[in-house]
Image (cartoon, rainbow, N blue to C red):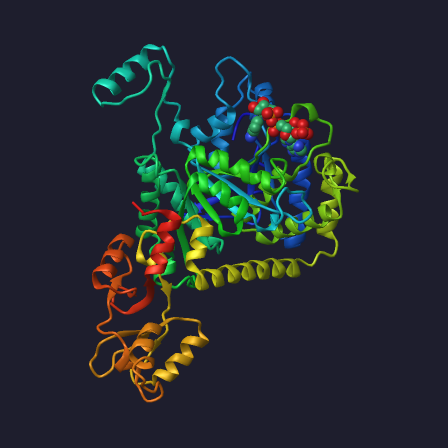
Length: 586
Ligand code: NAP
């Protein structure tokens, strides 16, 4: 490499083989220190990253840093050029880099450097993990429930810059075309913008999100969209997302509908659940039930709003990390700006850049070093050693400088941290939380649906899964005991000699046994059951199901899977409650 950038000798470049990142033990990683507070947080964070790698691998692995130049430092070195070609080439060449914040020069028609970076390198996914670290002040009652990774599409949507100013010639031309040829109707002189959302752009983003979920043992990927209003852009994103999951990750994913209709609310081991939520609901859900969301994939504008809103739930921009990625290139970055009023004061919180580095270590597969930093950070913040921004929110805090904060973390890393215990505790907490949610899904699917912002469409969405089935030849008395014990009002009756499935309800027992004066002990379930069993397919719409029930004059029907085996029961009460709550689905 010629010019201003020098790769350190002794380091080796990363490479991609068969689509997989190959990382040597002595990788060259790029860094841009950034403007304003950039140099303070970069030097502090680099000391921490290096210390963690040293401790985790006992010197066997070491990062070799190559300084790259963007922003004001680049302008000084490259004759006023804020984003030199040499830097772009190095970012592509090294594959993995990290950068501090950059000033956007005011006036003169500059594109924001961050926008240039994303566009010029086609870094189409903005990835923002948001989770709570013990000790960090938060406005939530249970901030520890927030642990989500947001994948925001970076290149399309209303951010594509296809806009026509009110009063301009191009605006007039477009408005005429839309009115005269497309029959569109809008106010005179309206400013106009175009919102392109493509299958290609949507699918590559969702692919990255699902792959991340699989690689990191995450439970679900939620597609966030406003498809109920913008059907051909946001609605199409949702459709393409599900399509991609089906086509490319068929073995590793199930839909949320299948989670209930086929698996009775129990997520099969290793399967990622693909679900979707309307954009406005997700803001509410991320406050009320954040632990239901693991990985989120969404378009540019939704993602922009959502990532800052969720970051604010757990400590704000001071500590939220991020990355911009293409298929092979990743640039990790502090998500806040240059905070010029604090430049060179060794004062601000290095958390955002520090955790972007943790993401980077995870990305290159150095999880042990990443965990050391997370564990050490929590120890330090819990002991109330913090920078000014947290100090003003934590009573009795000791305010320290950026460099002192980094040193406190390094002391922890080098000290007696029990990293195994830290990992075990974290895994146990995740597992416990997953079990609690699974129990809720299994025991009360409708309540879960109401609370989690889903709208029921099909019989499978509403049914009570795993019906209790009994053989036809047991006594009615035994079946009655079972029904009382399990708090259920009906049982499915397995085929007897006649080969027919049936259903026996409390009402059947009352009308055919009790009121007829027969002894429950001597009567067989097969004689009392209603046959043949009226069934509906799991994907039947609620509307059709209600029609079938009223035509057959029955109050509950069995739900069958594609092999026509009963897998659940749905009652008129379930449909009534659903329509009362959600209205009739479209
Ligand atoms: P900013 O630099 O993010 O600063 C806004 C406020 O956020 C600061 O005054 C400070 O709040 C708080 N803050 C930011 N970073 C912090 C940290 N590390 N620790 C503690 N508190 C922190 O936003 P801005 O003032 O709007 O933008 C300044 C420049 O940065 C502009 O040129 C803008 O274009 C650029 N920018 C760059 C990026 C990027 O490179 N990714 C992103 C956004 C903005 P208090 O004042 O309350 O202490």
